[in-house]
Image (tube, rainbow, N blue to C red; front, side, top):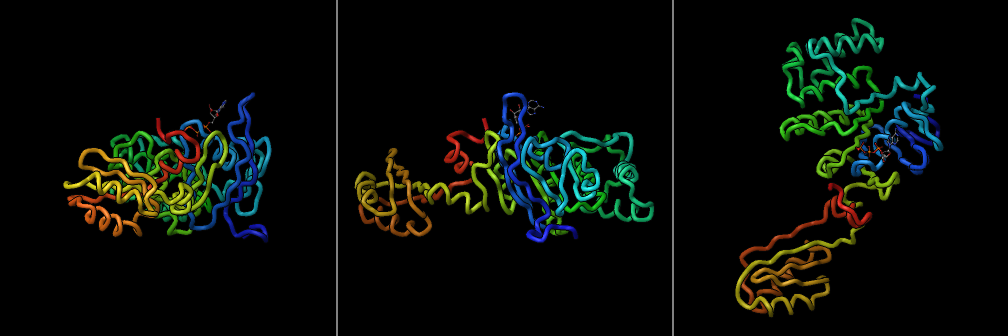
Length: 318
Ligand SMILES: Nc1ncnc2c1ncn2[C@@H]1O[C@H](COP(=O)(O)OP(=O)(O)OP(=O)(O)O)[C@@H](O)[C@H]1O
């Protein structure tokens, strides 16, 4: 392994900038991805995700900053380092007339894999992306999700240390999406570092060990899902439904330390609460003690959508 002495990270991105005319599409982005880690870039359309990964893959030159994969510098003129990188673009690059196995074999030959190794590797990749049972079916008959999984397979053939996936589930149905996500989950088990871009918070939450929230070309925050959610200040929402003296309950709950705000809506109380899981018992006691009888208690926790809103003042999706 040729990684620099200071880092066992597969990918080190340090201060990359990319301008298009007057627009700074990527404005000083830095992050690292370790072996076996799935790292997400979560942001809305136009945030700078594709431009960032194009620099990481060495397709686009950075105006400033550096990218290193396995300790080697990446850039449009650095061809050798590409053996460590697999890029799965949004667009499909497969031949519909060929079977899945034939497609993989064709691309494997292009990538220079030896014939004996290639047969074995094609089998492994088909299994990894869950297409082994359909390996010999023509890909023109495949569903959108199966085609996407085959596209991922092409990126995996040469056993890259880093696999980059650019919004691989855009435009596929929910069932296909689930199959794609399951395939991606299998990759980190193999010790591969995965860089995953998405504007779907559910995908980032499910797949990514760490997530960077990106907007306007900058990383606004980075961390595990739980670390990011804590940025919203540990504020949860609790909905109490019931009957009886709802107004008295509202007044009593408003006096509790954990409760930041109470809104009454008919027989329903909507509470803004610090750390609801610790406070819920005192909320129930407080409401019933004031004469409200409860039929339902519902806690909603902040998610990455709330974090994005908190950080940028905008919704993640239009
Ligand atoms: N080749 C280009 N020339 C000019 N502007 C560009 C170019 N590529 C991207 N941009 C602009 O840079 C900004 C970031 O685009 P980028 O494609 O990186 O965002 P993204 O987060 O990947 O969003 P999307 O999912 O829509 O691709 C956008 O404002 C986009 O219009």
